[in-house]
Each structure stands twice: as C-alpha cells, then as structure tokens.
Amino acid sequence: MISSPNGLRAERNTDSDSKVNTLFQLANCCALFSAVVFRPFFFRRVAKAYRHIFFDLDETLWDFQSNSRRVLHVMLERHGLQEAGIPVQQFVERYHHHNERYWSLYRQGRISQHTLRLGRWQHTLRDFGLDENAAPALSEEYLDLLPAQTGLMAHAREVLHYLQGRYALHILTNGFDAVQRRKLEASELQPFFHQVITAEQAGSRKPDPAIFHYAFSLTGARADDSLLVGDSWEADALGAQAVGMDYVLIAPSGAASLPANARVIFGLKELIHRL
Image 1: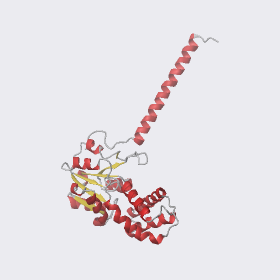
Image 2: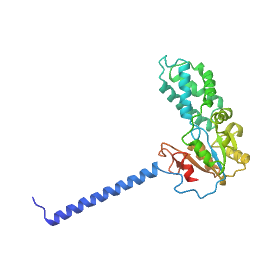
Image 3: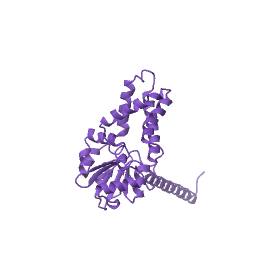
Image 4: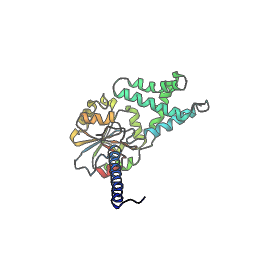
C-alpha cells in the first residue's frame, strides 16, 4: 500500500516529535542525575574571605577505613581467628558496621566513651559466636595499633601544603584525644595545624554548638570567617549550620545519600580550585 504525500508527511512529523520528546526526556534525566549526584560545593572560585579552616580528621584527612582494615587483619592473624574459620572480610565489615552505629550513639550523647570502645567489639564477637569477654583486651590492642597507621585520604598532604600560610588551619574532631594526637604525630600532619581541638578537650562533641564555640574561643576564629571541612552530615554539617558556620563535606562516592541542600565536593583536591 502506497501512502499519500500528506500521510507520509504526517508520519514524518510524528517521528520527529517522538525524537524531540525523547531528547527532552533524556535532558531532564541528565539534569536530575546531575542535581542529585554531581552537586559540587562551589561552582566557581569562592568569593568569601575565610581566615580559618577547621578539618575533621577521620575520613577527611586520615583514612580511617583503610587504616582500620589493616589493623584488623593484623589482629585476626595474630590471634589465629582466620585459621579457626572466621572469614576475615566479613569480620572487618561487621566491626565497621558496629563501630559506626556506636559512634552515632556517642555523638548523640546516648552512650559513654567506655561503652563505645567495648560495645563495638562485644557485638562483633557475638556475631561470630566468639567470647565477648575478650572485648576489653581486643579494644586496647586495637587502640594501640590504630594510631600508628599513616594512610591518608587522597591528596591530603598536597592540599594542606597549599592551604598552609593562606589560612589558619585547625583540627576539630570527636575522636579520643590521645588517639587523635598520636595519629597526627605518626602521619606527620601535626605541623600543619595551629590548634587541635578534640571532644574530650572541649567537654562536648559535634554537632553540639558548645564544641564550636570552644574552638572559636581557643583560636580567635568566628563563625563568619571560618569553614569546616568534614565527612559527616550528622556531626559536621549539622554542627556547623547550628552556629552559622560554612561547611563542605567530602563525599568521594557521590552525594545521592545526602540531603538535597548538602554542600559537597568529591575529593580534597577540589579545595585547591575552590579556595
């Protein structure tokens, strides 16, 4: 059957409209994907003149995940757990799961430091049917080995070299005082920072505004001339927002799991181009 010229023209117009609609749908999808996943903190160089930059330590500068994994492997081998049939990778994953859960409770002020240190080990041992009475000794061993590790997040030292001299740099961490200071010393990061402020020292922990006000009083900084660089929405972003301080979160795997208004970069090196 031969189509009339008018029918052929109508068919071509329908095809064209369909292609245009498809292109519009694709563009909308790309825009949505970009908005959800690729949300850089700054689209242009920052105009605001910061004087102080406060850094969180774990998973911001110091690579907690890799360093902790290395220590746990050493401990499992030392205690013969692998030979006893305990799957190393699963043990590490369960420990980190419980560690994050207990840290969240600790940040909320719902548990003590002692409970945090023991509970994460007790729950991990329980998951594998192991003796929970070993938790205190394992906790002490872990906290002795962990701060000696020196793995850093990508470009950490390069970025600190760039920022040093341009800004007053400080550490603001919820980590245990002695442990965090040993990490800084072992990884040779201590000289970059004017002040190292820990939750134990301040008597409060992020996101409590009290630790920020303590940090301001110690450093001479103000909320309006300071930037916080961290990795936790709960501790860093909410804490900074509570005192009117700018923040940026490091999110190497993307920002899809963060609120839509989160200020995010995907790696420390972006700070060189944004500040």
